[in-house]
Length: 325
Image 1 (cartoon, rainbow, N blue to C red):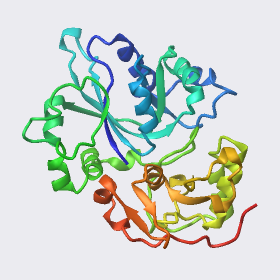
Image 2 (image 1 turned 45 degrees about the vertical axis):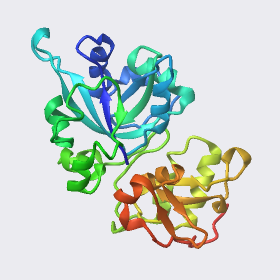
Image 3 (image 1 turned 90 degrees about the horizontal axis):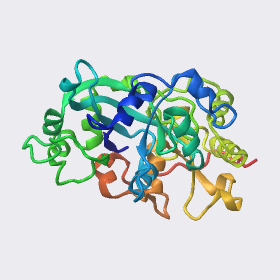
């Protein structure tokens, strides 16, 4: 998981001001959803969304590639309450990223959601309204007031250890600080169906109350390619519906991850080509912050070693059956 500051428009950014009510302060309307019918498999429940502007230099394309389901986003937006002269930039929303959209569909989704093709969209869990000045928000991260006290000029991930010394020393990680800051974080930790992938709560101690066939059907329903559906089915059965590292059995929190060197485009879609991982651990694995040594033990590095110390040296689960068809 990562934590982002999202600069969602200043007081004069008319496009952002107009877009708040379309997908951030309220769910996407039925009329907008219908524009994508037959093109994009959207969840059936309420969905919320935001997007990075597709800037000419392409910087936000790197951000949309980097942001992951489960990441926490603090939105610095402009209040539209009262007279325009009284509108102030502040942090008005916080939400977890729910899912990412297939890049080939960015323009269609952007046009349907915001009447413009120029945004790089991602789905959100229900945003929680907050009202925190830029100064107070910055000081909650860095009490000295040296960093983050002004209105952000662009969206950025909180990843600089030097600027985050306070929250890391107090909370152990930026992730833990974000959860503590949210307070009622359970409201944005519910999983669900999505276009590509959906973040859910991960808890290895959660009892499994559904038959594995029912859980398998839920797990496979989020697939977007025939090959992916079969791959997910094979991995889910091979690992008994549990994350190979954490033991998490929450269906919405699990992902079918290809092992390094394996590629679904080349037909590598057997159970031996992948590993079942919790979604946040899948992201760490893809970023090589979580590695699995030849002996089958987890090795953590970088910020992940600070945020996930309990995983260092964990023995990776072997497949529990030979399901591969």
